[in-house]
Image (cartoon, rainbow, N blue to C red; front, side, top):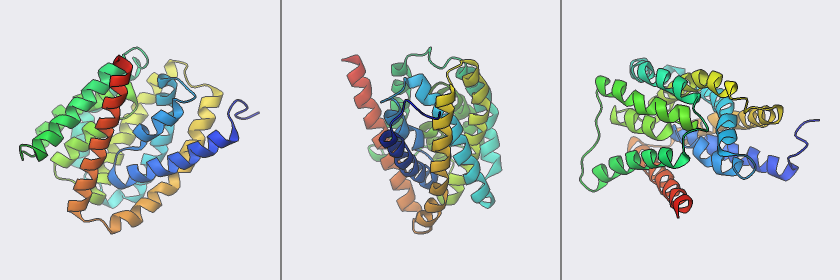
Length: 250
């Protein structure tokens, strides 16, 4: 029998949160896993939660790639993937062994550096093609260990100058590639049980409509509004992670 240990109310909550988080992710390019993880961790361990999100995000990103295909900028995507993929593939085998506080601290530091530079010192991060290659290293490492590469990848692609549909399409391609190479590492851990797969499939199906909803939202966004919304999302992610990190320490 399917999902016998999970209540109907909780499954409904997961479907609604998945639709909301994937709508944000499909509109701004990031945010989905970091919204879903706290809900999943109410029932499962951090490692289990990370692994369950990957198949769902992979499906969502494939739909985004197909839907926004004409906007994809392949050169920056390939440059970042060239270093991010080997890092992600290796790090995926270490999921569950690295302390979450280390990962949270790294992501928080990256977000703080970019936002403080931009809004306090009026210095904007600008990345050229070589910069994308180097930035792929921490992106792949964080992706493999945490199940999401959203914040560092968003920082890099924005620094490269991508916005709106080009940003969403290109980041979707990078994320799909990273999720694909992480799966063997996750599967080797034996974390994904039948129940985990059922929830992952449920999230994947719940997130598909989000791509079409995001298309309507992007039509009404201007580049300046998009950049500001992305910075607000990055800042919110950083603050939430900082609060969680402080709670785990103190």
